Image 1 (cartoon, rainbow, N blue to C red):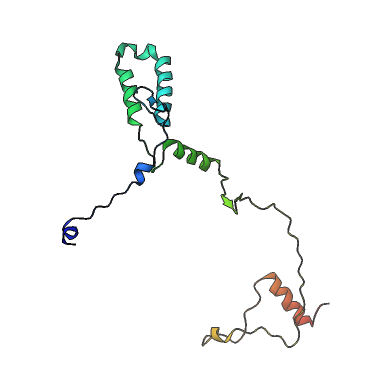
Image 2 (image 1 turned 180 degrees about the horizontal axis):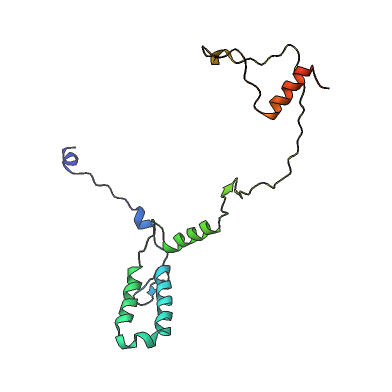
Length: 170
């Protein structure tokens, strides 16, 4: 008990050891020279080789410098991460984002505007009954305000006032 109390406890996490990156160029114990390679390295390798071959007349006077830069670029992308993801997973995410409908998704389906339709309607103007009167709400009355209500300001209010004064519809 006393010997265990004097020693520091050690905790080890092997999660990262279980996560192998996807590598190409390894078959059993045999690997490509300087391999195995990640998919990002293979893309840089193939694309760079094509660019170097097609543009040889432009850079041939530089000697081996562009080829060394190509090798450095292949080495540099060996553990490339974009937001914690491999470059291909990030590129697929960008492609999926670009392919989304601009309005987004609702319930897994593309959100679309509803089809336009013609709105029709009608209204009826009825004469007010004799017991109905237009009065201001109690909370809005001000002291010194005139007792009379000002004249109608809209055409509809004028029409209603005329029909009330005439005793209904003619």
